[in-house]
Image 1 (cartoon, one colour):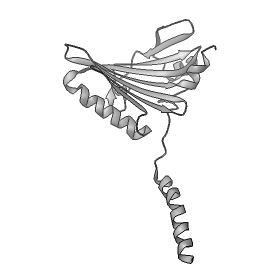
Image 2 (image 1 turned 180 degrees about the vertical axis):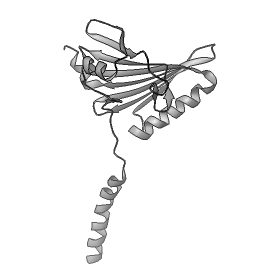
Image 3 (image 1 turned 90 degrees about the vertical axis):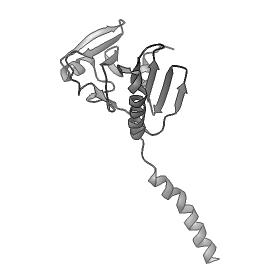
Image 4 (image 1 turned 90 degrees about the horizontal axis):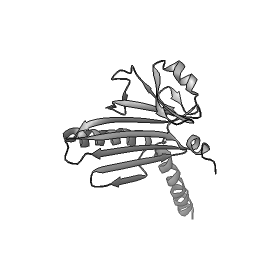
Length: 175
């Protein structure tokens, strides 16, 4: 009987030990020094070179006009432009995009996905079309999305990384 009791205790402890070894998945709290919910004024104090680049009356898009190559680097990729989105003065989304050679595009795309997966775990959704690949992570109120689109009959394509605080984005919807 003691042998069975010892075996039962050993088996009951195994799932707990296995769970302890699982990595804790983090979630984005913003982008670099900008945290979700920061005001536009706080963002401009942090980055004085932020300038308005479109949007609607309630939603504004800002970019850094003097960002260096290193400052436009995210998850191992140098992006052409990083856009900071504000809804009614509150930071809720960042979008980074760049054009890339068709010959190196898949390599850069794969590297980007590996870097994001190392930080956030495996993606929850991945869709592959004829000329596009879309990969999405849903992380406790945040969404990370990577889109790779090759231009038909061209030698280049586009990579877009979007990180969004879906809780803040949902607040602006009036249902």
